[in-house]
Image 1 (tube, one colour):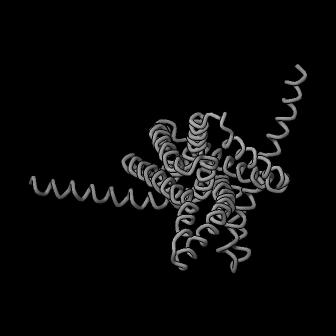
Image 2 (cartoon, one colour):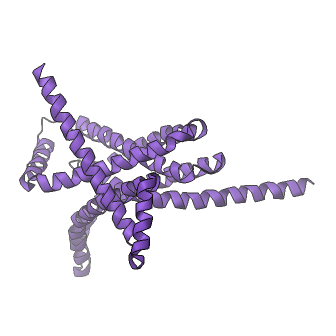
Length: 306
């Protein structure tokens, strides 16, 4: 009798772990759009930090990210348990925020002149090289800013993951959200650590005697900025795909538009949903950017008048 109970318990645990594994994969796919932007943003956060302090800064931000998720995961589970109707509005807000961030990058890319970005970069270099600058405080400010950014991105990841497992049991929700929180944090900051050290690895190899090794070093030096640029572009595109996808899947009218488009052009049924998700994401993001700009102008003028 005890043996059969033990086997039943083992079977239940195995089933639970299998469910958690499946739902973790589903949630990971849905949050992949945030991952590219998360990588690019966090890699950029350590720009201006001394080379020997890059990894300690990444580790400090990683610890802050774990603290963020220790707050966000229980909060998400409480929402799922007591106010489940709030999940869809939170998903829509998270999707709108993703689209807004992507649109803001597009607006900055096309409306700001390249020399403005060069001036900001030069100002950062001069600030770091200035002996009067408190580098310890500078580093602390960098870490605080990165942890704040991580909180927003982590909230998006957790909310999107919660939407993917909302109809599952509490135990599956706990397992899947916890797995996503750990995997995303370890994965993102492990990759960030590797990315920020690519140029150092390139410099090290470039100083070796072997021509082949020096060639590998030059390749890494060439790759590092290209990779950062690719991550930024891919992250922006994924923001529109994921944010627009959240919108089209949770607003019935837009969902019907996607279905009708797929039926109208069967040959492109595999591509049209993604294109329309991105289109809706871009349009929503631009609308949010325009509304916030209008709000800033109206209330900014009122504040100046007072």
